[in-house]
Image (cartoon, rainbow, N blue to C red; front, side):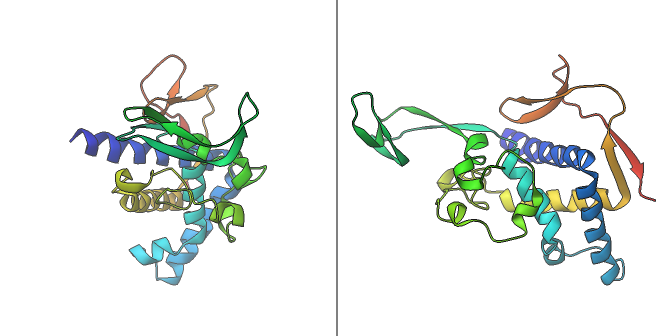
Length: 228
C-alpha cells in the first residue's frame, strides 16, 4: 500500500502540479495546448477523447514529456550492487597518474546513487538549451546524440521512470493519468501565477514537492479562472 500511495499517487500529482505551474508561467504554451484540445474535441462533436485520440495530441504529449524530462518527480535513486561488477563510462576520464580510465569497479554491496535530474539534462545529449523548458523539442525527431546514447530508461530516452527490472511498472498509466487530468483542466480553466508575493520552493526529497517558505506542507498557490 505504501508503494501504491507514494510511488503511484504523489509522483503523478507532483508532476501535474509542475505542469500547471509551468503553464501559468508560459501563457503562450497554455493557449496553444488549449487550442489543440478544443480543436480535437470539435472534430469529434465535443465528445470525450478516447485513449488513442488523447495520445495522438502531439503538443499535449510534448508538454508532458518535456516536463518529465526537466523536472522528474523523483530526482535521485540509489541501487546496491548485488555482485562485483564494472561500470563502463560513457566517456573516458584521465586519472591523477595520467592513466585513461574507461570503467569503474564496483564491489558487491556498494551503494550507487543515480541522479535522474542530471541524466535528463545532460547538455552533451540535449544541447545547450538542456536546462530550458521547451516542449517544441519533442515535435521534431530527436537528435542522433540522444537516440544513440542508449540511455537505459523505459521512457523517451529518459531516466524519469528508471530502467531494467526495477523500472516503474505503472509509467504508462501515470502518463495517461497526466494527460487526462491536464487536458480536462486546461480546456476549461486558465492558470496564471499567484498575485501574492510567495516564493515557491520545490523541495527535492524522495519525491519533489512544492512548498512555501519554511512550511513543509506541500502547497502550490496559483490563480485559476474560467476560460472565456
